[in-house]
Length: 127
Image (cartoon, rainbow, N blue to C red):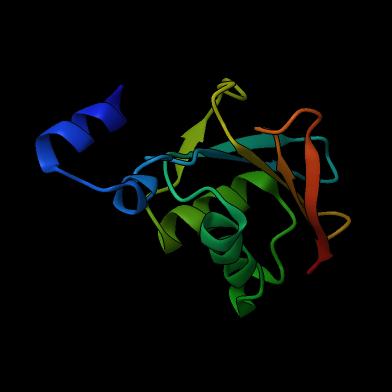
């Protein structure tokens, strides 16, 4: 419906409309630590691997992050680094396209595309 609005009111052609097809790609980060603490971070836009996935990868390789093994400390650090990440106490929303799992104990970083059925693993890295 929104695409029809853009086409009608802004006279966009098919190629231009494709840019607006996915207005927001939502993502959730799940941060886990060795004590079993699990924290959730929500991001409203650019949740795909080339957006949020790339940003988080860069964050994980910062020198000051290398010694963070606690989920709560990790959340404070990423908030200080980029305030566009929204912290949650309630878990997943259900509207996300991508879920990123960060295990601070095992030092793994995984991305799942949950908009596909069944969900697909996009990458599995260590940091």
